[in-house]
Length: 120
Length: 110
Image (cartoon, rainbow over the protein chains, first blue to last red):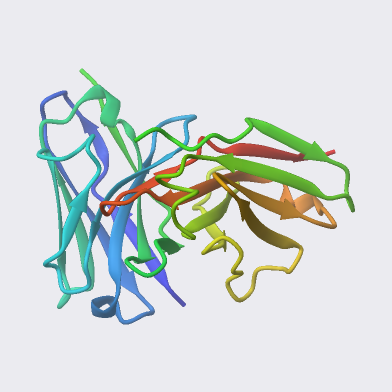
């Protein structure tokens, strides 16, 4: 069974930093691209970033480009999202997801999410 | 890139059918067959229901179907059941390694 468990969320002041983690199990982590998607309170979903299976290909939504960095450690089956220069509008539940990119652009399995609150 | 347009709400009675639309442009929905649909119950993670416009993952009931015409994709749920009540989101590839979401539709089973 695929399991994705996010952690690292919390309350941070505007301008601050936070690193999210996503621990994966139940599938061959190193064979899949992985992605982050967020959902502001009471709002719709927004794609944030994706990283290829090997970790070299990385893409970002314009709203986070230059501030967020996606990475992965295939030896630890873990996905990361380093978030810097955080803004109030970054407040959201952040989901990690196993994704089939390039050939389908579908988010196959999702974690339960971790809440990031940016507020003074 | 603007979000895809979905109706905020839809409703139907048990056993009936309902169709949810997802409207984009020729640079996203109309330009690629990479439309997916997700179901999200309150406080839960989204679940993939349809991908590549009309493909159903294993385990998803065949009551769920997808289609596309021009710049509008549609999700149809037939034989509505109480557990189908949830939020539904569409996504589309929008070129340049970018995926956009619809605003979501709250489906109510009357």
